[in-house]
Image (cartoon, rainbow, N blue to C red; front, side):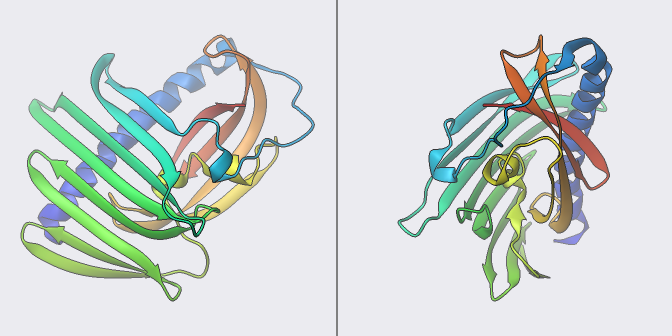
Amino acid sequence: TGPAGTARASVVSRLRVAAIAAAALWLAGCAGLYFTPVAEPQEALRFSLAELPVREVWSGLVMNGEKVGFSHSSISRADTRGRFELRSEAAMAFRLLGFNKQVTLKALDVVDGELALVHFAYDYDIDGSRLELTGAVREARLEVEVRNAGRTTHLTFPSAGPLRPSSAITLYPLIHGLSVGREYVYPVFNGETQSVAEVTQRVEGFERSELFEGEAWKVVTALQGFETSSWIDR
């Protein structure tokens, strides 16, 4: 996409990484105070995409203690061939290094029942500058078209196996089984950095906390040098 497009995509990626890293550090500091191991259910928790009990999530985005935007994600059937649409959007407005920033992200991923990517469409607007990506998996490779500042670039990524979109990372352990000790390693396509990277997810515990009701599995996810912890309940 050229230096300008790459820089704009990189800004979005760094913003998300900064927010994730801050949350991870906060949770790490609280872990000893708020999380207590409890006995895990004998059977692993697992859902198909068609059976997921929660199909839509709204969240507030907070930076330095102030709400700066929102995110929304949803899952629905795409067709009668067992495909599903993962839709996500986020909007943020904040000051960074003395500058006002406005970011809007919209993404549509069509996946199969195992979360393997079929095709996608992403639209990023950063301070009024658009970055659009569309792509599809064909014959063991991902073909991507990038449009930015009046230019179009074509990228190709070879794939030795199923490739997941980054929007599927949170769902992956739910579809393939939540049980302490399990570990998953798989490649994902990241539209913000226009790259394919390997994700590692470990189910490290089953815990109770003052921060949520009931018990939940602790899932640690590592991607591109950063690590985050999530808690997923039944």
